[in-house]
Image 1 (tube, helix red, strand yellow):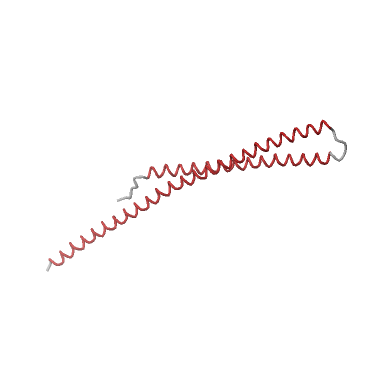
Image 2 (cartoon, one colour):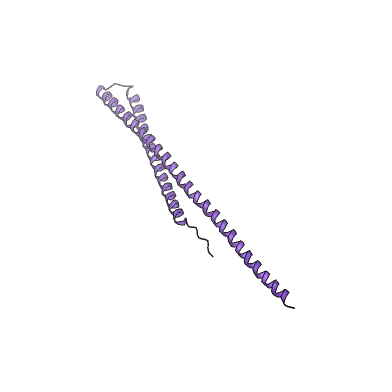
Length: 149
């Protein structure tokens, strides 16, 4: 007789859910890394421009150029702030995806443990049936040997 776990289809679904959660976590981590890279690029651009403006100030100062620089700096700071928020949102998405993966893994583990317990019970029952059968055969043989002179 073969062992049959009645909840096998549910276990397969839970494993599929776990794999989906694992993929979602990977996508969320990739997005977070991309957002952090974009933030680093924006901050580097601002830093480079500040350095370039510091060198330009050693000579004559062009008023319109300074006004453009200040306007660009304000815009860059706004872009940096928006990118920081995007990084925070991406980090929150990673945390959410990670917790979803943990929950999916727990659901799979519960069913796997149940399957192992049921298999152990089935295996023990099969061993007992085999022992009972072997005991019956041995008893019948003993009775035949005892009855035969």
